[in-house]
Length: 120
Image 1 (cartoon, rainbow, N blue to C red):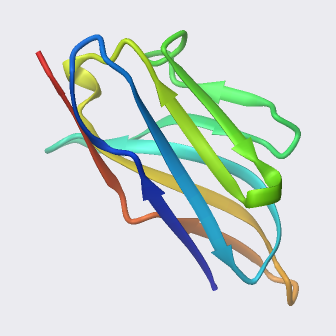
Image 2 (cartoon, helix red, strand yellow):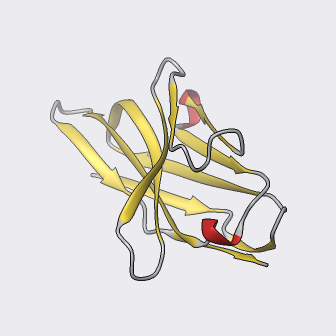
């Protein structure tokens, strides 16, 4: 079983910055892709960013140039640096990871979510 624990959310003024972290633990043999989604009230969960083991990144158009995703493979941890935050970035942010367990099967796991609120 794999657990993802997020941290770093909070309240920030527009134009400010926050850094989210997501640490994976459990019977992990390897992690392929890690990433982030977000869900605003009354809306669907949307893709934000992803990063592969080799460091290839992908971003939603709405966050390109403002958000940076990174990971520490040795710690099974990913980060999301969010700069120039806007009120429309307000949402619950969920991290995810997929990979392989130590006993063979693939896994896909989600964190519990962390609230990010950007005031105008």
